[in-house]
Amino acid sequence: MVMMIQETMITNSRYLDLAWRGKYVFTPGTGNSQGCITLTHNDVTITDIEHIQNRGHYFRITDADNKQTLIVNIYAPLGYNDGKNEFFNNVLDVIANYAGENIILGGDLNITLTDSESLRTQRTEAEKRIAENINIKIIENDIVDAWAGHQGYTWRRGKTQSRLDRIYTKLSQYTNKKLKTNWILTKSSCYTNTRAQRKNKF
Image 1 (tube, helix red, strand yellow):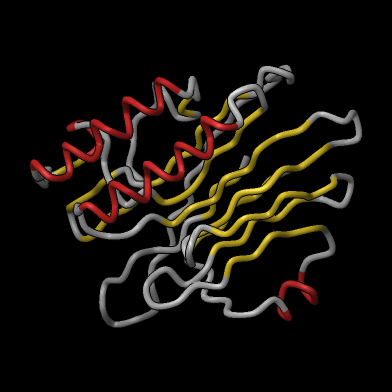
Image 2: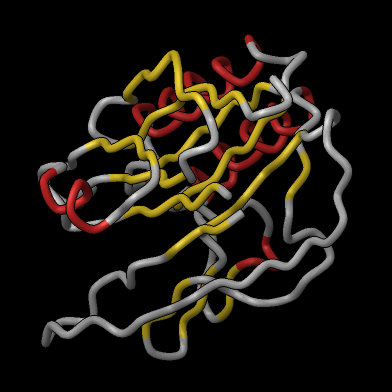
């Protein structure tokens, strides 16, 4: 079991030590990023933990059968500038370095990758350029969108909806018995219409 959570609102690990009985990797966030947590059960070994600024982390888990999987959990920057493009280049270059291993990449990409992923909003040219770069690198890394072929969105504000959250996998050493993707949207308790917390569960 691997559960990836973004925008956790948790700034230190004391709460996790009390609330979670398995293992975890935790990146405290600042500002809008507000932290990422990846939860696993106890029957794995976690190694090679690296944090991606304050926007996530990646690490290896080794299971009881000695199979290794690279886990990448991210909350990408907002906007469509060179910094965001560089962020994705760095993340996807990390994945390329683990090409021979099992891979799970999950998180809030804060970008739509095709026109069909936006409802009642126009994608800018800057967004399209960054998305094209991401799509090329996804193909090059041979990782598969877990929600391929499904309809729907993972974020909404009023009547505007977008698909911003994803889970990508490459699990050549495992047999997929069942794939079920469930995106959970929660309403903010604030007066302003803020981004909803999402849980990406594999």
